Amino acid sequence: MYRRFGEVDAAGTSPLYARVAIALSGSDEALRAIGTVPARRRHPAVVLAALHDLALAGRAPAFAAACAAADGDAAAGAAIDTLLRMTDSVVAIAVRRQPQSFQTRCCAVLYPAIAEAARRVGADAVGLIDVGRSAGLNLHVDRVGVTYSDGRSLGDPSSPVQLSSSIVGDRPVPAQAVPEVVARVGVDVDPVDVTDPDDARWLRACLPPDQPERLAALEAELALAATAPPLLLRGDAVAVLPDAVARVPADALPVVTTTWALSRVPLEDRLRFLHRLDDAAAGRAVAWVSAEGVGVAPAIPTLGDRRASGHSTIGLAVFDGSALRAEAIGRCWSRGRMLAWLADPERSPGTSATGSPATAVPSTDGERSDRTGR
Image (cartoon, rainbow, N blue to C red):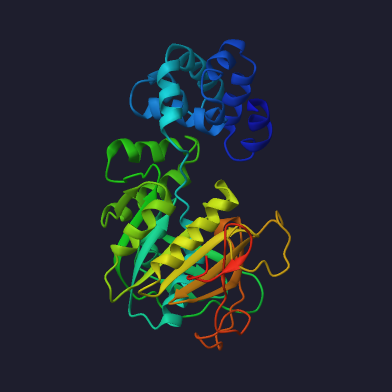
């Protein structure tokens, strides 16, 4: 695993981590130390981030110095030494922490989708609820600027965080703006608070130290997010979602977002998540915007695309009373670097993707049911 990570995964992105991973793979002592990490936490990205976290905390000065100098050989030796001397600390970090990525580019996908959700419901204000990415910029999508390859721009042109995305096909993203955001709620089993020094350090630790451009972008994103910290709710999304929706004022549309978060949970739990959204809409409209692999988000059409096809589906589901209107409104590649918008801007907000007034919510046993017949 470590040799492949060094020779394939990190080879083109982080020469320093490539060298460190290959060195770890060739050290029997290092591999025995890594073997004390629980099996699901032994991935190189996790262990290397744990070592980097120790360096950033001042607890592994030799590894920190080698990383600062971008000296792969010195970093390899210092990483092995740190791992052997501080095995218990590395294990503790790897067990406690989830690998994190501040995926800003997905805002290029989320911005038009959230604006479209508000348009269809006729909402003048929204409350954003992000599931599984509580530290990311998803909750600040209205505060970034996005420029598309066709020249269209959305968001805040004066924001310190500026993104770009290439349009695929001839249909532009809609021009409407995200309405006022009156609530920002993050839901995660291990929420990361960007205002907490240890949490912020962990986000930095998840970046290879020889990627200064990504680090500079991360610092801008952290600074922006820290100016309006969201409410963070700890727990499983199925259990916490009702509380999250309740935090959104009654005159605003709750918009739940998931970005490449559902593939990590079994289908049965994804269906429970869908039903929980349906329950939350008993007394108000609720929207769900998703960017997930083909076939991962339940109720979102696949458009005939194959799983593992190299792109993701952008889904929009609106739960309103007893109706569910679910549609695939786009495709994206590389977490938002490329975007194909599919939704028909002339389509009435009151019809579903198939033109029918409502779609039933799939039940956990594979049959279809409504709110009263589950």
